[in-house]
Image (tube, rainbow, N blue to C red):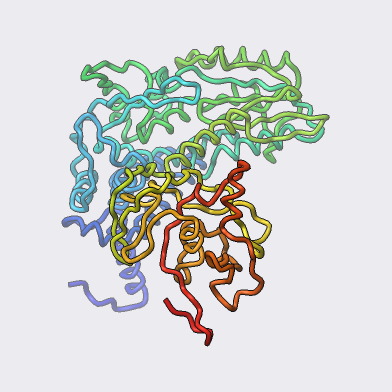
Length: 546
């Protein structure tokens, strides 16, 4: 039992000890088994990792290397870091369901909790496995090779990234934007725009690209850069693990697997110091020294803004020698020196000056790619094309079985056809919405009739069908009106009187007018086959009946 504090000093000491014990238990976890995965307080776990990263960043910024190493060891043993790392590779990352050479993925909560416990206590004896080589298409038609580590190596790499990244974030150059927390390609585009706009004299651009940067990184330079990092041995094994392609193991004497969690950080560590090699200088307030170039880098894409073409050529010569010590070289097909009046494409944007004004907009290639992508998405959402059934089939409907009539001409397959025998009050439209015939409903044809209704294809029967139907249901051949029914009904066959006494002015045109017009080449009522239905008649009292 803890003795009861006797005075104020003892109480303060006991409180401080309890706080330290609780903090240690929150960061490194209890000594017993790991708690249920579904009951983990993720907000608290991420907060613990964030605070420890901030401490590593501050110690690195102050130049206290011994404190940096101690905090990194604490991060590698942290229970919160183990939980966050497992969650990152099994729930957050896009490739969480992609397996490595062992064919294993972790999707069950119990397996995730077990992996987090293994990371915290049993991963010291782990030997990294080779990565699995896969290829993805590039925008230029070529293929990019990726190396997919096994799920255990991905979790260990995420664990090491949280310990190594804060140290180098305090060292990285201000114009480096690729694969860094809180930075994106738009930040790089904004930096280029603010540097070149107005009366700025840096009008020459060295647009450079590194050839196969991830595949040619020198291992010796990377290991020398990270120095005495506590997980240095594990990083070395990841670099030397090898690649399996077509069930053949190939050794990796150079390069880093493009597809691992730690690979982008290794790239930034290897390319650190490029601005200094290019001759870039900064004042204490962060502004660039007048007369020097400005280099902006996003991973392996580099652009240097210079005052003259000669200065751009000098920067290219300096960087060529600097990259050779790291096993890298420029891609001569993509590296060029251009004036901003001609424009330069960088990260999918075109930066160009028009009459002294700098404009930044998406490049033509980027617009072409997004149009192609949107077209593919739109086509995929259309669904399968409905199949057309044969004539003479039978279907069922809420009103009873529908049988097929005989002697009816085939219904036009077009969605809109000219209307014949129009009457007054139908509006200025000259086209009517028609059925799509045999393809409208599976198992039906264009001329379907219900039992107990008039079948056949006479003009009188077809015109009578246009005024039939219950409210809200549009018969075949009825003009397409927003309310579902036209404002006028056609005259009753043979009498010329309307089918509804409350319908306003009526037309006196008879069905024979349409059929007579067919002799002159105009479409007649015989050209269409409406669905006959029982027409409603109006009694003298005004009530309708069937």
